[in-house]
Length: 261
Image (cartoon, rainbow, N blue to C red; front, side, top):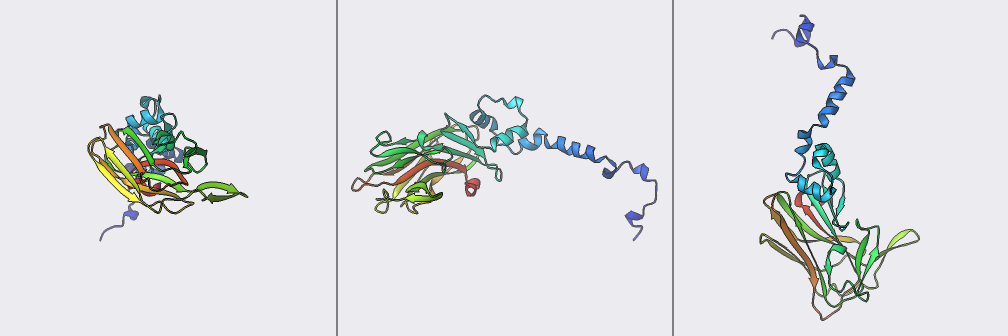
């Protein structure tokens, strides 16, 4: 079938230099420079990344940062709004994730120490949770205005039955205040400014473990639209009291990134 390519015996210099002829240091430098190219990293960023940068990095100027630096910064958790909210990009999916602290939520009776306390814990990204001892009327509400990149998003409440503590260096769960959650389910809701609504019901269970309770999903159709999301959990059957609940945060994440939470 003709001569094998490896048997070519012409003037190899006429073919010009091969990659192997270039000094190793030059090759490494070329690849390093290419890795900083804006077009590579911009493709990994949401279309409305400038809005997200303004929220996450405050006064940092996008013009002063390369796209690689912007991407690296957004993949780290970034606190904003007096450190009551946090935002980051999921590296695997590129999806946007938000966390909203219990301190940014409206909680019925939160200022009455007979019912609620703010307790410090390392088990929260915000280092504090709202702990319910006992109450008749449970209602927790919140909202956020945000430009969500195009996609489907899930809303979760991160809750814990009991009160975590350490004993002899081991994590234990205090359960003395847990009651009332097996009688009636908790209702979770979300609504959006463009008319979307979701609702779910769940009995709270699994004491001693943090659980993500799914309130529902919504869809963002335009990355540049400012959307208001309202969310709540409630159990307002006043025939019985309920207690022993830690409310940590609300999580809003692109549905493709939910397994990473």
